[in-house]
Image 1 (cartoon, one colour):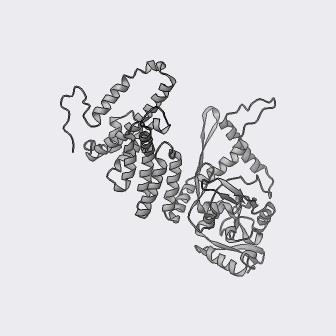
Image 2: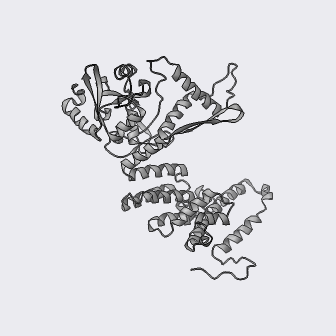
Image 3: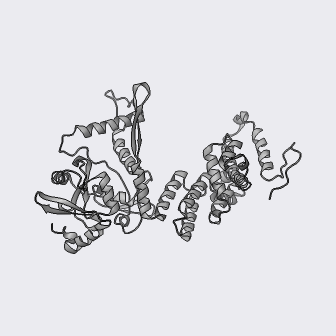
Length: 470
C-alpha cells in the first residue's frame, strides 16, 4: 500500500520511508567537507573508509527495495520501459552492472525459496558492518556489530545466487536445491565469505552437479564448437589475433605460454625490457616455431604440463564431480578422463581443505617410444572416416587405466582431439584386431559399447593383460 505523499514539496521529512532518510543522508554527505580530510587522524581516515563501506552496502540494499516496489507498481510500463531501462533512465550515473544485479535480486521478491537470500541482503541495513568485520575496537556493541557483518550478503553475490536458482530449479529436486542454496548462501555472506569470483566458480560447479551429465557435456561441446581464432588489422602495421577458447584449451595455452614467458635478463645482466604482454606474444610464436620446425615422424614439443585435481572416484566414473584447475576453474569429468589417457598421473591424498597430505610417484602413461610405435601402426586418427595425421593425435586407452586397463600397444589407439572427445562422451568401445596388413583398431560405434567391452576385458584378461586379438 502506498503512503500518502508529502504535500509541501519544500523540505524532505525524516519520517518518510526510505526517501526521508536517504535525502537527509545525502545532505550530510554533501556537507562532509572532503577538502578538509587532511585534518583527520590516521584512525579517523580508516574509520571513514569503513563507514563509507557500510553506507554503500546499505544503499545497495535500499536500491533493491526501491526497485522491487517500482516493479510491483509497474512504474515506467506505461511509457514502454522495461524495469532495468526505467531504472537506468532515472539513475543514469549508476553503473549498469549494479542496476542489473539489483534488479535481478528485486525480481526475486516474493519468491519464498529465495527469502533467505533477500533477508541476507536486507541485513546490509544494519549498523557498523565494516568496522565489526575488521575487528574495530572501542565500541561496547562489538558482538552485535560482528553478528550484523557476518549475516550480510552484498547485492552482487545475491544476484549470482538468484541466477543460479532460476537456472536449475526446473531440473533439480526442490529439497536438494533448497539445501545447496542454503550452503552457498552461508559460504558467501559476511566479510570472510567467498569472493564473487569464488562464488561464481562454486555456483557453476554446483549447477553442473544438479543437471544431468548429458546436459553438462552438451554445454561443454557447445563451448568447444564456438572456439575461434580471428585475424585482423592492428595499429602501426601489426596484426591482431583474437582467440576464443573453452576452459580446457585456455588452460593448455596458459600452461604452455607461462613456461616460456618468464622474464630473462639481457646479455648485460639488465632486467627484461619486454612487457608481460610482449613476453606472452613471443612465447606463443616460439611454441609455433618449435612445432613446425621438428622433423617429420618425430614427436614435437613435449606435452604441456596441465595440473588438474580430481577425485579418483570421479575419474573412474563411480560418482559425479569435476576436475579443478589451479586457478579454480573446472573441467567436466569426461574432459578429465580424456586428458588422463595421455598424461602423467600423480596419486595424492588430499586433506579436507585440499592440502596434499601424501603424494606418490608420478606414473607416466604412454611413453615416447610407444607413441612412435602407434604412429607407425595407426598412421592417423583411427576413428572411422577420419584422416587427421598422427602428429595431431593423442594416445587413447581402449580400456581406461582406472578400469585396470594396461598401458601397452594392444590397449592403445590414436585419436584426434575431436574424436577423442566423441569416444569418451559416447563411451564407444574399440579393439585392436589382426588383419591382412597387420594389427589395426576397430571401433564399435554403439553408444555405451565401452561398458560391454570392459566386461569382456575383465572376463578374458582382467588386469593381467588385454584379451587376445580376434
